[in-house]
Amino acid sequence: MHLFITPAVLQSCKKCGKQVLPHTTCKNCGFYKSRQVIDVLSKLSKKDKKTREKDIKDKEKEGKAESLTLQKLSKK
Image 1 (tube, rainbow, N blue to C red):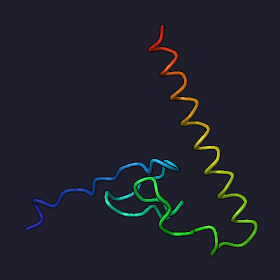
Image 2 (image 1 turned 135 degrees about the vertical axis):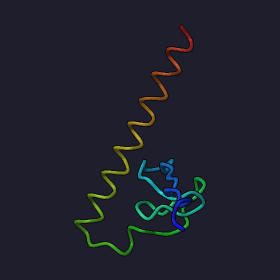
Image 3 (image 1 turned 180 degrees about the horizontal axis):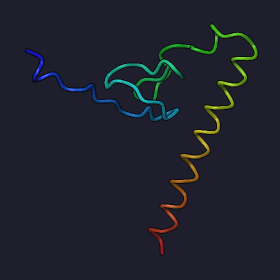
Image 4 (image 1 turned 90 degrees about the vertical axis):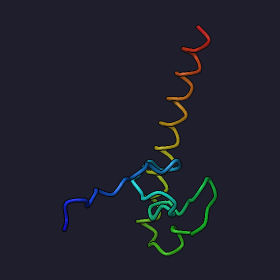
């Protein structure tokens, strides 16, 4: 019976923010538990590599900006 099938629980990657299954490497950036396990960028073409690097840097900047604002709010 399919009454007890539950949807998959997804978590966001700490490095790039994409949705991934828990306890798996991120297929977008290749990180698992804040370590690079797979070099995803080596298999891409130059154009794809530049866009992927740009996306990853943008996500990191957003994460840093959010943490700074939270730290500033906690100090006040």
